[in-house]
Image (tube, rainbow, N blue to C red; front, side, top):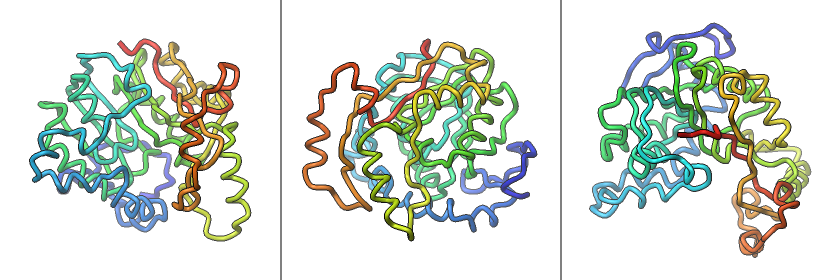
Length: 299
């Protein structure tokens, strides 16, 4: 099956191997630059290799040594919430569901996690084995581009994603949001935490200018940026806003005027300068590093 097909596919058409569902066009997927890039990034992304150290007592007993404590919108997530089904876009090695299950006591009957990085998904399998988050739930891990969700229409109660959408080109992100709108139940909820980078942020503007000087070797997963109005338009066009009319598009509380790295090389004093920023209310949206979008009635 072509990766560009618009035909809706079902999870039953995927092959389950080592706890991960792979598409029938797995070999074609493996040849894409996107997958090869994320398999490589996944080796160290967010410290994911720490899951392989869980034989150490401290890491095994305290999951925060593995994941840290996610902030932003996740701080607003209610305690003791139960839903039938959860879909996570860009699930990685399980950092967010582990936190929501352990710290927020979120419960579900079915969990679907999709990510293009096989490296990260294999660590997600191990993370689930070690920490048993969402205990008793049907657990479905899918290796695929998130533009194609092998799920039925109106089948998901809660869609979550963390720092993922900015890695996806504009045409693809619109396709993905349409797919999310298709599978989200009417009245369902979503949390896209720090999922969009802010087009007006000075740090991104500087980084874009320097990057454009390099005519060769541009990073294909370089972070894309959007304005609040563009995010609103995409949520409307995708059908997500129609199914979940009570939502918020909100600038993050992280601010920046300088990029902290260029091609992985730290910029001197940039981190300290960015952490010292205390913008006025009128400047918060300009200086915010990114945006989150989430259901205003999470509970």
